[in-house]
Image (cartoon, rainbow, N blue to C red; front, side, top):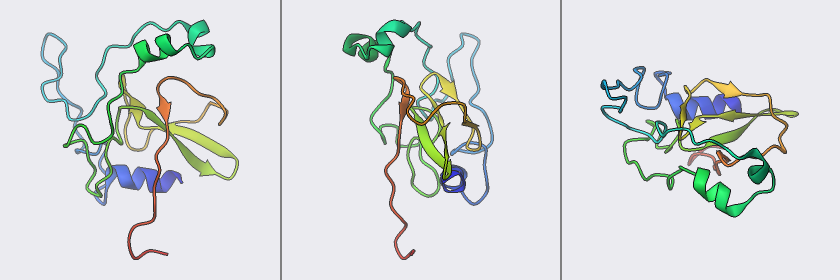
Length: 139
């Protein structure tokens, strides 16, 4: 659910991002000084027709995701990796509504920001989902 995802991302201090409240700082050449998570890749021009057809070469060309946990410091205080960046994740916000959270490799989003305009059947090269289980000792 929405609250669980946001809490796993921002932790008990309710930070804006998994690493804190500060946006990464950029140098004059546009590079991020310290890139904690996978979110600062350049957006690639999309051939929508090829994506619609799920053309494997186009999807491979567009995909800038990394294996979950690849960036060891991109982790919330609860141990959840890649909550900001990498791929947008489907999150259930009510019985009838799903939203995308976390941003993707070319768009950083906060722990509370969600995009709720898409039908749950919608897909794109930058979307994914997270498999979760209850924490030990919980019902």
